[in-house]
Image 1: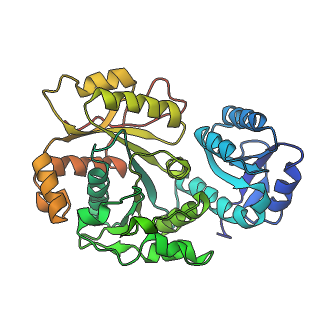
Image 2: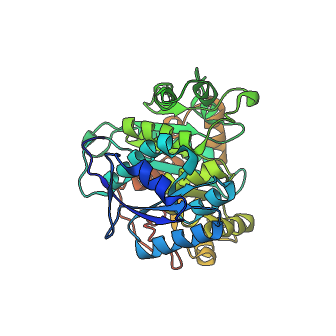
Length: 386
């Protein structure tokens, strides 16, 4: 990373915490002071949580192209959660800045590099899948799309794709792929410090299709309770350095970990079905999480004769549908029971074709259009393949 262009960093915030942040930034090869057009606005938060949130909101207005970062002392969980909702990409405890800051700067530099017109080296796209309610098929779509992204790209160029199973507490991706993981996140967390992120990348299991899988533990008692947002970011950054596409199955729950993934993601794929319960939950999700990256609606198990049409959902939500996946419950259930991706079991099926279209949109291989009228940011979407 030493050869990277240093990030232009603008400091703001509590005068009592600013010296700590300024001292931590001194000597960092990836940071330089900047007043105009900063790459990063770093806000130092003190005891007044609302004041810090106001400064973050002001920074977002005044510097819309900059990444937002937060250093808080003391480290207040409610502040970090609210900051993530405002679009903060890095939230660090001021008491541990010396150790946490270099990794945060590397991640922010990586985002600047990925957004540049031309880039060198691999820095894969991050895709987050989350469901509007239970039973809508999040894992089916995450597995199917990740498997499609393991196929060669345009011109036959090879692609590396990995799926990270964070669907707590069960994590069913290994079942969908017929894989028995040899190593899980729980075992990785038992390792020391900087080795954890590298170990995560090296322990991903390889499927016969070429897709890699980083899975949850086989036993619920071994669930990765020690997985911090900072360590998760390091693991994802390591995976992105080795893969063209990193897909994460987040299940249906929103917490500090899933918010952090969505904040890092290039695309957030919100999965729902044609039901009023989903419409209600999607609206609440958008109100709560909309600043967290690019939200794309995927309607699974599409029914053409349903009283609630996709167009009705789009109108109610003010959100265009990114992709429609047709209903073939028998096929998808058979694929799960056999431990095979749908596209491998029935490559010519309508579901397989829709999953290929979804993956194509995720990788930017199809034109995208449309705007969500009330969004704070622009959200590129493509019409659903119906």
